[in-house]
Length: 434
Image (tube, rainbow, N blue to C red; front, side):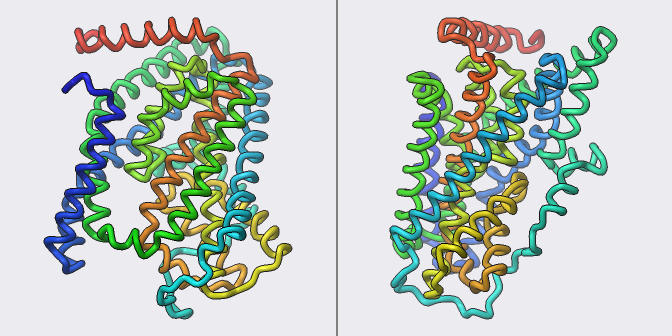
């Protein structure tokens, strides 16, 4: 049984979770009772996600500072930053445009056949209008401790960039501090290994809780909308893999095999954060040098949420179609450009895409009540979005590494995998001496 690969354990846990949730939903038809039971079931997945969030800040800080310090100078950091940003902006635009095209082609909101929420209803989401000024001021932390406490990945990245460049410029004087932070990153990765052992249990609990409250029947009601969205996601995956193939060649398929566990984990928990440590490990095995992956990945979590971006345009148009509101092409393009700005920095905010959608609905006089239509199935959609974000960030990091000449050859990567495996075996054999 122990020989089963981790990805298979996660798949088995998903199936058991769905069955368990269905049993609870069938046994307790009263939604209040089912929700209460689901609350207790989801304790496991909640604790798991809290453990992951506990690790993210120190992990991003330690790996990023060491990575930047090893890059050597501010010019290298600026170059990698520029290349990453160019990829992220292009991928975001492609995702938004694809969502727009697919929503217009498939018309998921037309002739819905479901009762529409009253126009005056509110989804109770904070929908203050996003502005460029707010985004730029939010970018820079008032306090590093505060950004760590709030898991503000983007702010941690900004501070770590300054800190890493400063350490690199100090040369030998900073050697002791760099080594200490490097040891901290290893300790964080070791803790991550312990936390990841809980992943199958967390996956089972997350699936069971979702199905217990909503039942599988809700999927039938929204089958067309969800089907259309997942068709669009498959197309986006295809585009991402094709883009990866252009730059990485056939090796992109090797990368997809390596990230399958991270993909399933982010899908089942509806959290791309949960997959972060797993993706770092997969990129190590693929041959991406840590100084690139520890820099590009945290940025990707703020700027490169491909699945969430596509969902934003898709969902806004779905709601507009449901209320029979016609949006001209010019209005749709304006909406796309606004979303391009407002969606940045939604990492770390739970169900942030809903907040962004609500703000967009307000700006274009589309009833915010339409959000109530998709709230019930949002978790099932969030699973696809989160998994897509994990794929998009993995491919982006590998491509930037290739551009920078920091991607090992296949032979060197294979040797690195052996070294990583033997190190893992040694730490298992002598846990006190790792």
